[in-house]
Image (cartoon, rainbow, N blue to C red; front, top):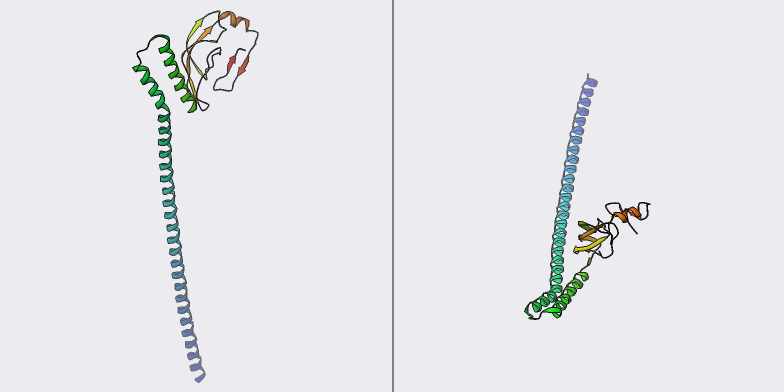
Length: 206
């Protein structure tokens, strides 16, 4: 009887110890979970702050670049306008001048050359048309002229000058182009060369 009582007490003590251990493990797990959540929240806060900081830095860079671009364009326009003022002065003097005839024409020609030189300093170059053959990449054909004086597809005259700006077409030269059937006949043998460097493939007669 005594042994049974002792066994019951021992079992009860063991059960109590197991319950206390389980309660301790549960409390420890809860503490670990809370600590993990706290760490995750802290990491999330730091990542959010870093992202907001990067966004602010990018926005500041964008604003600075936009301001620098605007200042550059304003300065470029300022320099361009400044370089054109002497040409404006020349036209002003030509208007006030009472002169006529050849001297007056030469004065206007000097102003024109001055203006052309200014444009060339800015990177603008006139497109050559004299003694040239029609090139659709550079010229705009306004009319065809039946003639035997010029070779077929040769430029007869220029109606409006064309210009290039830093190797890019600013305005095509408007020209009249020769149509010479005899020249075409003499070149049917295949003389000439093909130029496919531009947007269109054209036959250039040498």
